[in-house]
Structure formats: structure tokens, C-alpha cells
Image (cartoon, rainbow, N blue to C red; front, side, top):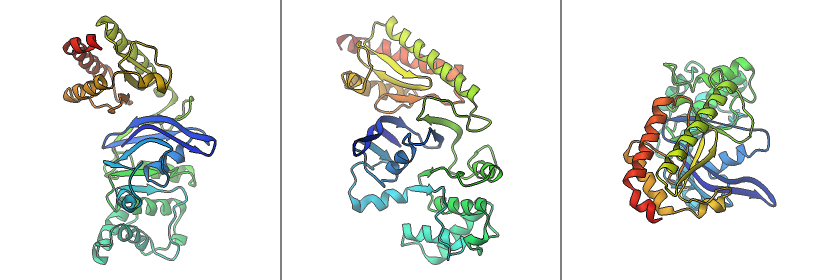
Length: 326
């Protein structure tokens, strides 16, 4: 998934302003921020409930920003959604709710296949024995588990959850979040590296779990600041028209000597060199967004930072003539 220069306005109110980020397959990420920061707007863009005012939204290889209405259903088959308020149909059993979500998305699925896959999904969330229960006969935590089963039964490439524990008490919320922790042997198959990324839409630090604590966030941001200075020192050493900007764990690379203080400044950089940098990093086994954006994650340590710095220095040395001509 990749957002490239995405903005979204509601009349005169700007909800998202030039958002850039990318997520790789297998990543579990958290989007945090105060009320009104634009979290739900961002999630609605992923599922093409709304279009961006400007920019590009790529989801599982599909341009969600520009696809025709006839292809929206194809996109949504690749995206599973877990809602805060469950959105279960009260007159259907847990099993029927899950199967309904599967067959609506793909009319080719037979009743027998839908039942078998739905039972498997309920088993995965610990409700294999409650398939015949109606939503009103289930606790809030159990209803959310049914909603998660409905979201994953289609085997989507992307799974998004909009405050999935917002209506649950602390104990039930912890149980729901445990389903996504791949350190557990019974974790959902869509869970990637636990707390691999945190996309923060506010300036503050939010302790999300025992893993992502304020201290861990400060340490991650300090590691990012140190790495950014190290990379910029390499650029100065090679007298290259290249610089790294950002704050904390968020990075962007630009091919210009001029200060970069706005999206307009960033757009003045050499786009061909940025494209070349993307492919050179890819050849070194380092993935970043094509627009030159990347983030650090909690497991990254000194060895990974050393590897990135070595790859950047190799780029600076091997592309010296092209950089000098820029």
C-alpha cells in the first residue's frame, strides 16, 4: 500500500495534507492521533469509500484514487474491514454473518464452501463453538471476534480496523489485540511484524501496548535522528546534491542542495536520481517508497542502520558522475 502526496478536503476544511507513506506485505501498523486528526478519513481512502482531493492511493496494486466505479468491488474484495461497532446483521447467526460477507464479495462461492470457510474463520478467532448463536446472544468481545472472522474469511490482501476495541472493556480489548500478535501460535494469518510501524498523526507520543511505550518511541525517534545526521554527513562527504529530511523515525530523500521546507521545495529535486536511488536500494535488499519515503520500525537496530548507511555510501560512490552533473 502506498499514499503519494495525498490530500483530502471537506469543503474548506483540510483533513489530510500531502500524506506520504508506504506499507509492505506482512506489516502490522498502528495509526494513532487525537480526534479529528484524519485517521478515519485515511482508512476510508484505502477502501475507496471516498476519493482523495489530490494525490495517489495504491492498494494491492490498484489505483484507488482513479479506478472507475465498476472496479470498486474488485478493490474491496482485496481489503478486509473491521468496524468499531461490529455491523453484524442481528437476524443472522454468527456463522451466517461470516458466510454472508464471503458470498456477497464473491457470488461464485457455493453455500458448502462458504460454510466450511466461515467455520474455519470462526475457529481462528476462538468461536468455533458459537456459530449458531445470534449477535444478541454474544458478548461485545465475541461480536467483535465474529466481525474479525467476517473480515478475514475472504483472505484479503489488506486488513484494516477502525478502532476495533473502542466499544470493549480493557480485558476484551486485550484479547482482541492478541489475535493480531504473530508471536502467538494462534495468531491470525494476516498479522505481520508486531508493532512494525506506527504512523503517528499527532506530535505526541501514545503508548499503544507494553511494546510501544513512550520510552520505546523516544528511543526509536532518537535512533532515526542519529541515522538521518549520519546519512546527511555521507552526502556532505561526497559533495552530493542529496539530503535526508524528516523527523524521528520518518525519512524522506531529496536530490537538491536547496533547503527543503515544503512539498513545493521537495518537488524541485531531481526525480530521475530519486528513481535511480530507489532501484539501487532495491538491488541492495532495501525497500523504500518510490517517492523516497521510508520509516524505521521498532526492531531495527545498529546492524540495520549500518547496512542502510553502507548502501547509501555505495550509491554515492558508484553514481558520482551522475550526481556531479545534477
